[in-house]
Length: 252
Ligand SMILES: NC(=O)c1ccc[n+]([C@@H]2O[C@H](COP(=O)([O-])OP(=O)(O)OC[C@H]3O[C@@H](n4cnc5c(N)ncnc54)[C@H](O)[C@@H]3O)[C@@H](O)[C@H]2O)c1
Image 1 (cartoon, rainbow, N blue to C red):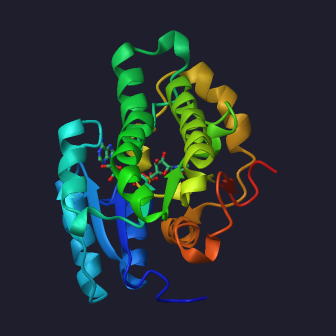
Image 2 (cartoon, rainbow, N blue to C red):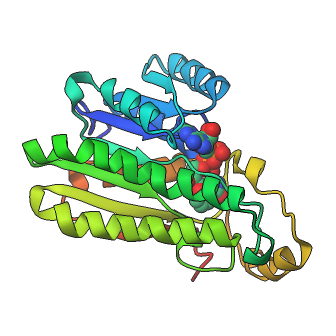
Image 3 (tube, helix red, strand yellow):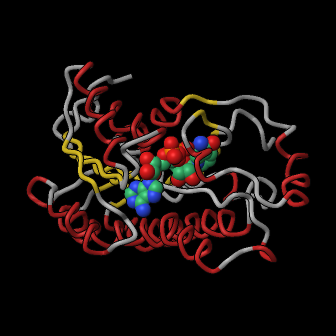
């Protein structure tokens, strides 16, 4: 493994204040990248800053809501020279396991905005610069909820399936321009996503418990960050349009 495989490269990471996004910022910075990270949670970003300092690393961390176009513009404007080699769309929220019959519009709108529209806006913002130099990598963090209907509510499952569709569309359309777009589908990962994952409708959650009973392993955030780093590096140059499950065998 090349431990400085991102030296001289720039990465943009959303969800940088917690969990997988935070671990991705740390890993990419340690592997030599200039990292711009954003999150809606300022306290989370401060924690990321402290973790970076403990590793003698730094990153440019920005409080921003990826559902707001003005915030996306501000984050992209912070990229040195307006250039990014790797975009990691990590920020995401759960939906309290709500089935469609109990789903309020505001929950649907928020989950789709964070998990699908935000990533689309970031892709739309960085691809023009990637096309000019004929290279770039985008990694979208979907979920096994992007592959099956049995592990989350309707809004989350729809958003994560949509993110795989976004991934495949970009891989097809911009692959010939040297831009690789791939998706990762983690299973259970030890993070703070539980903040939006308290079950609110008992019958629906009870049905999903049959799936949860099959979970074999809970991953650490850095194990997912390692996959993001590899997919975003030149070592994965022949990987485009892939949907990679990283669930410890849960879906097998
Ligand atoms: N933890 C798991 O078990 C698991 C499994 C599969 C997929 N995922 C996916 O991994 C990704 C990262 O989640 P995590 O588990 O690290 O959760 P987390 O809650 O620890 O981190 C998610 C981060 O996204 C940020 N965020 C939320 N809305 C945002 C917005 N509008 N703008 C900017 N930042 C925003 C949050 O503030 C938080 O810091 C998500 O897309 C999630 O769906 C997680």
